[in-house]
Image (cartoon, rainbow, N blue to C red; front, side, top):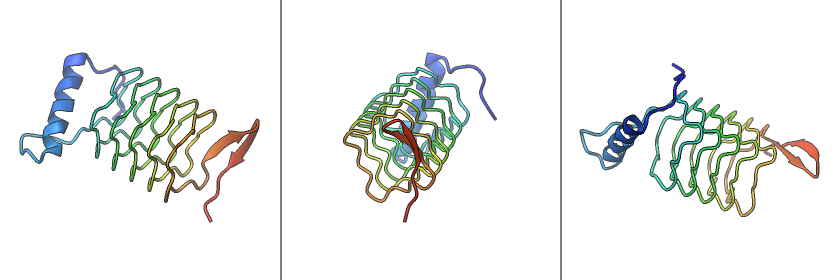
Length: 151
């Protein structure tokens, strides 16, 4: 189900509060299901969204600086121009994600799956890539398109 309209502030705040309770193992909590959501330009910086379902979400131009996205599903997500500096994405699923022009400065990308992701123009200074699967991911180096292959 693709959500066409953006979340309003109150609706998103309630969903994030329920996710926070879920992370604390509170029975009133609920894992954030934001698959296909329109979150374009939304400020989600420094939140704990670990385990959230964001596959297919539009997070273009979103502020995800310092956000904890470990174990989250961002497969097929649109992260074009997103600020993901210092974000924690370890063990996340990001197959086919579009990270064109995203700022990933000092982001923790260890042990995640970036297969088929587009990293064209992404800022990758200081990223942590230990154990990251990059098969088929695309980046431009020196103006040349390169497809990364794990060996």
